[in-house]
Length: 270
Length: 342
Image (cartoon, rainbow over the protein chains, first blue to last red):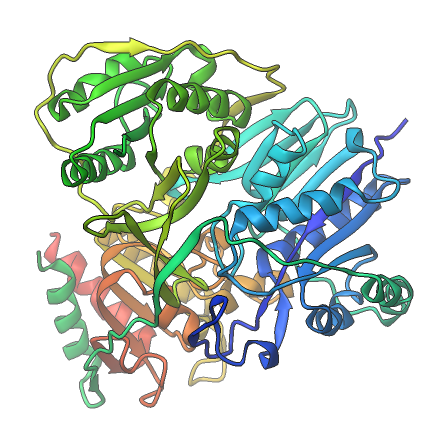
């Protein structure tokens, strides 16, 4: 019998990378200027993991896919309008703060509680997916902590590929230093996989998938639990944009020969 | 009083500490001296004792975890080993390199010890207290932070400290016992590009960034992707540079457009790629924030070749922008480099 997986994807929302970001210090610590009006997208590496998860589910009939996402309800709704058109999933939203400055340990505790309470989840079939780092905090900590809190000791980070085998084991390619991949074989689920880019292109929008997903997403958003994340004694002394601005010399009238001479001199200089 | 532990691991050869580990040792020596705290170095590997003499010059207490199970970088065994080292050292501050091996397990280990963790630390500052700096929003803003909770784990980004180069000398080591859980994962090996196709070179002085312009229509109305690939490969061969790419160029492979055959997502720099550290960077045919702002954050000297004299992304970020056709310039550079190398 083919293996059945329960895949849970943890994915936050982040400001659209094309936006200009400016830090501000508020009563609850640092945040982003006009954070709530910045357009948001699903965290890019976590989005890769969602598409990979959908592929695993599609190849293994009877498998199920949940998307667990922490963020302000209104922003989640905005992002889901697009993401819901990509792949089929069941959303489990948590209404909470957005951004990179809340403590990863508090985020992990909240998400673990949410995952543990997912109705119908069989932890013996669990594949916990997410991005290996977020585009906000970029710590690579949250998913690992959730795995640890759920008692999962087969964890992989910087994953670019998973290949399921007939005996329930699977092969994982993880990014390591120097542009290499480490090849590991795990005996089977449960396991945690923090994804890098993976190998799949972003799926095209499918309005029918979107309509089907939204029937579950809207009620889930209405029922989303509101949480406040504890700081865990984390203090920010300062948060600043890098002030460094270079005096750029723009060379418009040099010939290709002259540019090449200058660049070779520069490249070979000690 | 704080107690400082530096966690390290051996390299693929199995008998020497990795460069990133030696950088963490430097950070540990500096921090322990500043806080007037005792320093312990923990070493993990198949034969950790063999690597210990490299830290003999620190005067630190040295703890080791050795054995066949620790020759492989895997969560279950590495987490158990790091947990045992931390418990034996009873440290309040734990420094470790932000290597793929330790980044995989450090959060879990911190949790097991009731501690907290911060990663991608670029410096440790503060006088009376310990403060750490790290970047947020993919290297767009830098914060200084501290925690009261202990133990506090800090993973240090590679290249932020010099590698410890104290005199290698024999040192007494203390072996730490590890109770291993069931090991369900086996590391079967590594996959890397063919030797002459390896384009990611973290130790290279120069980062060469290829932008999407290489695969666009040229003045003759045609695309010249294979020419572009040849020029870039020649340049990498002649200079030993590392290759970075903009997101748009890498993404083209998923959009069934012509692409440079040797580029993968591993080459990508910027928001969803890496932010490598190199002394010099040369960007070509790039336009946009990703390569010029985020991807170049830790590049020393920066130059760019672009057809757009008004490229707002390069201005203020590059030291020199050459307004020129990169196809022509790169071909001449390659010719000059070939001549120079005889």
